[in-house]
Image (cartoon, rainbow, N blue to C red; front, side, top):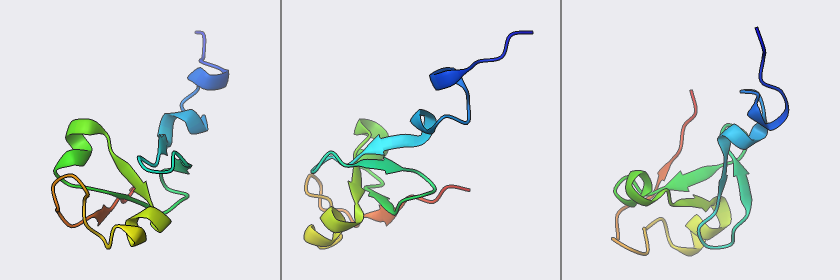
Length: 73
């Protein structure tokens, strides 16, 4: 049986890497603190880094909903 290697392997960081929607900083789910809007996040895939969430005062700039912390379990 062939096993995926490189970027196709499930342990590769590309599987859980997202970018901040404002500054385009690479964020790794589970390693970095990542915020998202519960309304816009699932629909558009919008994530925010800790610094930009602080600049936005914890509110989504598009709909005004409170940003929540993304928890990887």
